[in-house]
Length: 111
Image (cartoon, rainbow, N blue to C red; front, side, top):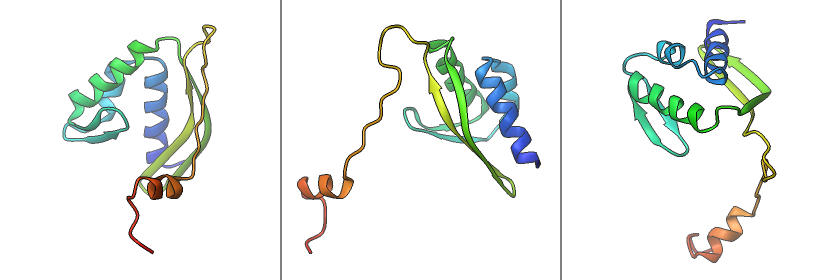
C-alpha cells in the first residue's frame, strides 16, 4: 500500500467518524476539491466546512466501499453512502440514453 492509499483511507475514516479536525489536516492549505453539489472548493478551510456540513446533515449515514484504486500518487475510492433507513427510499438509480436525450433537446450536431 502506498502513501496515496494510506491518505485516502485516513480521509474515509475521518469522514465516516465526522472528525472535522482530521479531515482538515489531510488537505493542503491551497487544496482544490471539485464536488457534484458545491462546485469547486478552494482551500483547506472551505473543503473541511463542506465535509462538516455533509456529516452534520447525515450523522448516522453509512459508507460501504466497493472498489479502491491506487496508481502512483493518486487514490480513488468507489462506494455507497446511505442515510439511515427511515421508511423512505434510501437507494435510487436512474439511467437513460444520454445521446438520445441530447438529440431530443437539439444539442447534437447534424449528422
